[in-house]
Image 1: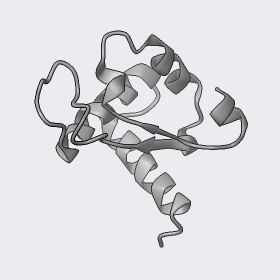
Image 2 (image 1 turned 90 degrees about the horizontal axis):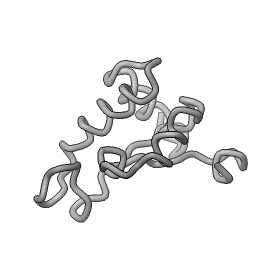
Image 3 (image 1 turned 180 degrees about the vertical axis):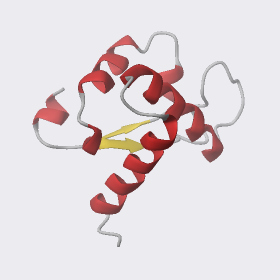
Image 4 (image 1 turned 30 degrees about the vertical axis):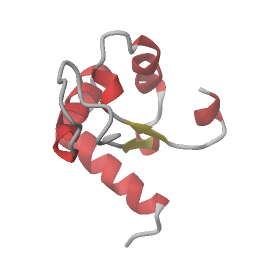
Length: 93
C-alpha cells in the first residue's frame, strides 16, 4: 500500500495464483487500474500449481486471476490496461 500511496505502480506476477496470496489479492482489489503492470518472474516463479520453469505465456493466467479478483475488468482488459501502463512507464509511443 505504501507503494501505491507514493504514486508508484506494481508489477503483478504469478504469485497472485498462489493459495496464500490474500494480502496481494486485497491490494489488487484496491489499486487503481492505471497502476497495474504485469510480470512473469520467469524462469523462477511459475503460476500455481505448475512445478515447471516459468515462461512468458503464463501471463495469461495472471490476467485471468487479476480480472477475477477485481471483478471490474475482463482478462483482455487487464492485458490492454497493463500494456498501456507499461508504454507510459517506459515512454513508448
